[in-house]
Image (cartoon, rainbow, N blue to C red; front, side, top):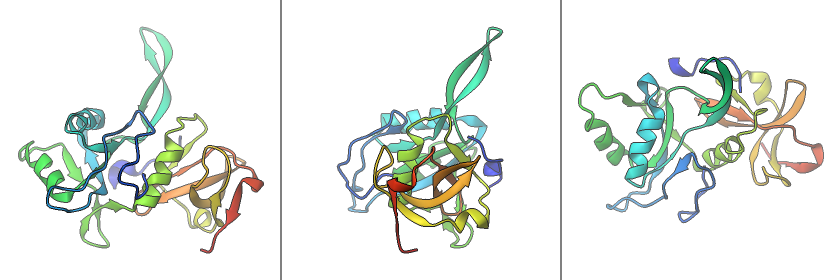
Length: 210
């Protein structure tokens, strides 16, 4: 996880026919030709080629997600806001492992695309659908106050587990955390990273069994 060791900064559900809700979430979910259901995989794309790889997968009709954020960059001597990947070298792909393996092999032995590895299970990193759904729902707002966390303290994980009832994050399940003096909902992708929403009011969520 070397590429994800950053300081704090800054999924779709099980409905196989759900439409896209974000410009950076591409493609439609499917069942593989052999009847194998697709899953969310996390891919490491070296040399900051994540958007290029996403475009290549888009052409094939593959569903992907690259978390994006606004960043000030210098253009012709002037600072401008530009939409850039929030986490370098990361692209989520909703596909079968066999098809991802084939896509990686097309690059040859020097492929810039690799799996993030789940060391506890000894297999490529897979993200549960509900967590991915909620992660995308928060990330897709592109609000500048959203925070991405790649190192998650145990204190944050002790927050109450809740479900948002109202507003743009309705349906999202996560932990109530306080970051930068604001109460937020944190959705964690196990073993990878988390995203914390913008300010949320106490009346907008209910406590769930942990």
